Length: 300
Length: 180
Image (cartoon, rainbow over all chains, first blue to last red; front, side, top):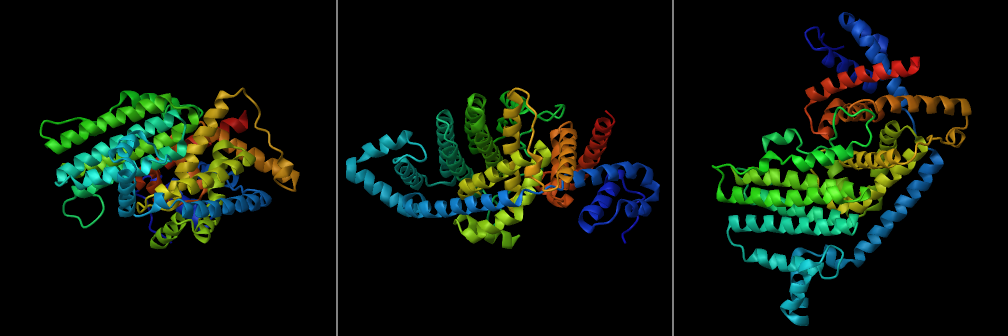
């Protein structure tokens, strides 16, 4: 059936047996017969795995599922309907730019643009703010200037996220986090070398900088460890933001800006109420991952 | 993977059929993932529905990154569970009683299922968070090791080692509880 694994570790043999049991429906006894040299060690493990699998074989009630499916379909239809109405939020960037600029010029010149400076996602002037940023981007001519401006814009998104967290607007945080991700992606793509599209991933992304919540492994019970996770973030500055003597001007600048944004986000997470924390955590993960790739590409 | 990407892109446009397909393919798996972590089926039902509602609200910000879309759903589910457990841990100790007759027609079967699930959930909570995650993804969703590795952002070898230590620990805790 498959090659003997006498020279393999118990972890590999166990996994091979589990694969056969979980995916091919084989019996525990069949696997034990295949690996007699491991049988005594494997047996209790496979039995525990089998017991876990049986206990985990639960399904939701059919009537609940039917009702939930109905509610979900209604919510999808509702979102689709609302989306059509919110043209401005989904119009192409050039259309937002033109519309935003026209509104700004027609109503009161630069006053609207200035007033839009502190607007947040979901507010009426936020589109104007984004349009003004696009104009600003149009005046950044070099790759380096565009990268710097994108880092500044990413930090503006961080400021928005902090403000939104204070007013407990989860959806707004997610919108700002998505734009933040775009800004950092732009830096990565602007500085890409020897690639046709997309960002170049740094080698260390195999191990995530921030896992989804990454509490202490020592924790007994698996609960209430989120606070430990937050506390640990406060004292650990990711190494990628440490400026090295041989860093280019752009890389140094990105690291300094990145660290400022990182500290603002962590500080906001520490103060935020529980229900806001998952959205802030997503924003923080996007921020760290985005900066990781951006700094790596800028340093190539 | 390309088909899934197309499906997700359609869902991002709020295509009802695409969302329906994603819902059907993942609902039971996400439910099991949550149920074994919290040990309560009725609460798990509500949390599962919340996962899909959150996914719907946030789909516009989702970016395809060449990992299964379900990885994103599991991440939302994980956050839901963490939030739920934190809230529970701050409330006064109450028994997580559920009306088992509301779940199964056969009360004996229902009671057996309930006890098994609670035992597993209880033993699972004594593992480290990473061990919990491997067991949840592997046994509740019967996910291949390669996909577990992809979702957890680790190498397959690391997941195999984690799986080994997790089952060892799980066995120890299940045996202790059964003997107690």
